[in-house]
Image (cartoon, rainbow, N blue to C red):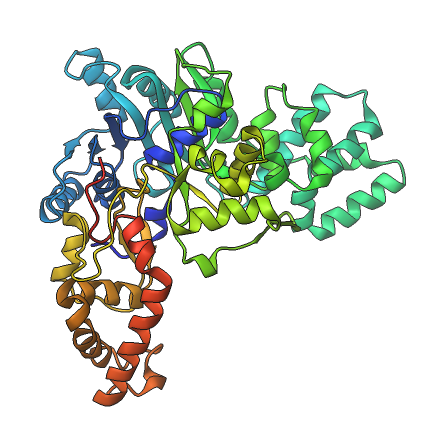
Length: 506
């Protein structure tokens, strides 16, 4: 079992990628349909191995140029009992040669992933573009994570580059352009208050255009966003959006003062770069769809095969979200109805539409509510519903990956569990992991004894040290306390996410 990490939390799972397709009116793969998924530069394979455990209907392929890393990845998959994954040594150029030579069939994959910031060997954008065209099936998705600039002052480079371009494009617009630019660049100037003060003074004096000319002087270069757009755009690939779900909504990702100026540039060739500037984005996860894309006009069928749920305890589910200094409140009967249902177990659009509490709300309004909750991170799109039963007499961990916890001495760090319900990892605290481990080991009757032993073993941990758990009686008392808390908060959730014993999920 893997400790939780930022690498495992990246939104490269097939469910999220399919959800973004639906947001763009493209028919997503049905959640339980078979698929092929490849990651270029998979390294030692933790993320792709875990995704394979979460999506048993998929066939996964990990490619990397480093044979030593691939051997580690293959060993991990074997030890964890993950059989729907294969590892091969190749970089992007070698894969392209394999396609050209007929060694690998073209249009082999539904999903292709490349996470550039975590790869020591950088692939060229041109090669990646050709690879996406060659390897992806029609209606497939290429997910590409990259830095807009490989430099610590990425926002400065982007500001100078785009300012210079816009001044050259509209030299006669003068102060009107300067005022528009001030609004669009609100996020940039918020990070650079001295420059904001200078620019505002220049604007007040009618010298804003000249200030921009001076401020954009110096060496700069084109952002990778523009390079990717220029190389990928065409008849074979279409930009779908971002795997970071909130980034697909201007209202959530850009300051309100920037909206009008950004909206006016929506059809501009530099729009995505301009959006980077307006939203202070220095890393992107672009999704590109392989034509011919299957487009659907009717919204409801696009989302009808997803389930929606939460992975946090019900009492910890947020009822507000703050973006760009603006707080969104999720109070009221509609939000209460959706969140309360999804907090118990994953639900479908059909469950919501036919629920008595929401009988007077039309389907489109319910869908819009769900989409907003997903964009704000309250709900998550998922792969399946909970179709099992709850057996409290002898719960067991589900799946070979989760069962690897039986061989570990868990500690107080967070851990990543495989969930065939969510289709992506779910993360539990160290204490939650200990309770799950000991529940699996001792059942309802023996869990307290095993938990008490673990608390004594970890008594010197900074979090536990004040509790004096070296004392057997105190350790036993705290074991009962933690078990009661975890059971109250998480028992139903563990079952509904498919982490402990349920009936088989098809």
